[in-house]
Length: 179
Image 1 (cartoon, helix red, strand yellow):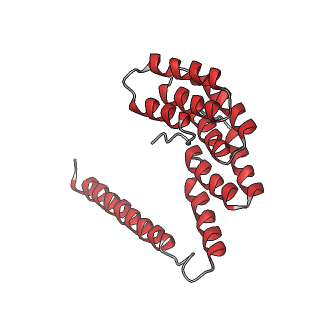
Image 2 (image 1 turned 30 degrees about the vertical axis):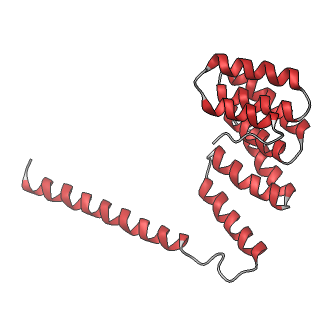
Image 3 (image 1 turned 45 degrees about the horizontal axis):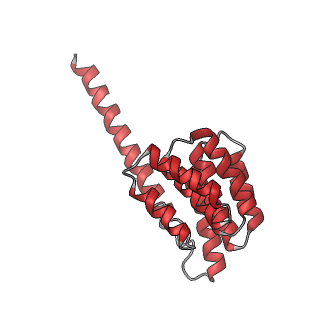
């Protein structure tokens, strides 16, 4: 490689690295802005959720997390809008499961059940999904369906401690913890 071409290549690489460092520093400064300090709790939470949704980009799990906080935190309309946006895209079974879990934990079983059923239709061989859905069926009075799902979970993975603990929790009247 001739000397002039080498100089151009090295200079280009250094300019690229410098641009990356400057971008990283400017983004870090944006993250460190006091969007929440000194504000009342609702304003602080709102500022953080706005930043969180922006940071989530197109990530479904990330947007579900932000939508869940809005929903559970009292702004159900905004939370539902975010959750619906995920569901109206190209949701994976895990997106249905995560949103179903939110509804189930908040006592909205009809909404949760419909989403668990969609997740099961997509990926009914996952032991954790089967056990979690079964636990909520059990907690909502359908022990027969719960035990059917538990049996499928243990058949799919008989060494899954989370499946066993989620099933057990439901018999004790407790929400499953999928860890």
